[in-house]
Amino acid sequence: MTTFIILFEDNPDADLDIRKKHMSAHLAFLEAHADAISAAGPLSSPTGAGQGGLWIVAAETEDKVEQLVHRDPFWDTGLRQSYRILRWRQVFANGIRQIT
Image (spheres, rainbow, N blue to C red):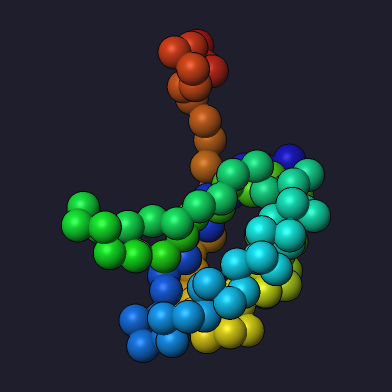
């Protein structure tokens, strides 16, 4: 299993109510896929302006991650402008080295 980080960029021209309108379905989607999506949340600038979101996902392939992204209820709303999928290897957690 590989760990991936997904960085979402929101569409700056999206309707401001989209997130609020679809949040319940988005959260239910995350809960339903908790076996793969271990963490998710919004990103913001230092001033608090929304800047997209981030997921941490465990999956066999990048294709599986893309499938998750496109099944998220936020995807078809126009809220998301783009996303990047990056492989991630954790080397430090909770004050403990994960590698030697």
